[in-house]
Image (cartoon, rainbow, N blue to C red; front, top):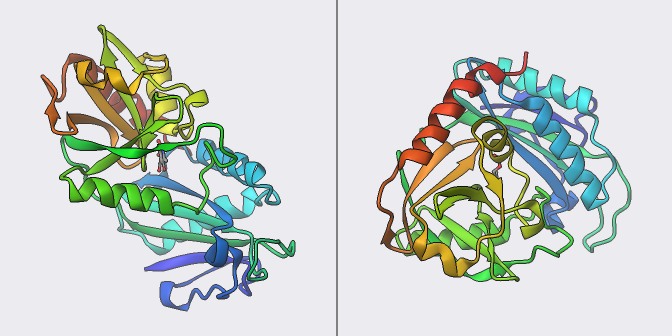
Length: 280
Ligand code: PLP
């Protein structure tokens, strides 16, 4: 695999073999998870919704108090990384920007940002998934709520919790007892015949697939009490890798249909419009 890297002693950016892309061991991204990232899908060498992803990267950096990443440089890096990995299709493009080298503690020295763009094959999503609700909560009022930072250890832990119980995605509630999101996905449910997804005030990441489903396929943003989950008739996850993925069971409670009619409509709507939204 070849990656594009800039900063961290790599200057303005270049493509190198992944094993040669050295990042200093005292990079704050490594020592304290001080960084932000994006996962973008590329089909036929074209990155999907790249502008929206780069905008969100800037919002995450702002939220974390990092200097604004150089978007022109990054867009060029994405192009170079895709060209260097031609044939990887569909491709998972991981953009990481960290605070760069720093001290071992939490303080920043304000040095140069480290940029990495890595490309790998995107696995084909399963036709439906079982999800497991984790017994702890996402803090919708926390400083990191809604930011896509490299501090993903809580998600790693949650996914491991779900996997040990037969789920392939974990679902978080928030401190108010409402539905929030998955470890790498947003969630939509059909309740009382209505398609809803938690509002951003409930603490989920502003998923780009979520945003596009709301735009293209409808649905409302509304708080969903965790206690209402046993009554949902359909549910699906959204993410860059999954698009719209039906949920078969929640905590072992099998839903009547996966996909049900509302989910099928969202899948079809997303597939139809999604193909046309590829960034030039
Ligand atoms: N929520 C979290 C915590 C995520 O990490 C992701 C994506 O990785 C999503 C939601 C879905 O966002 P998107 O549709 O932009 O991929």
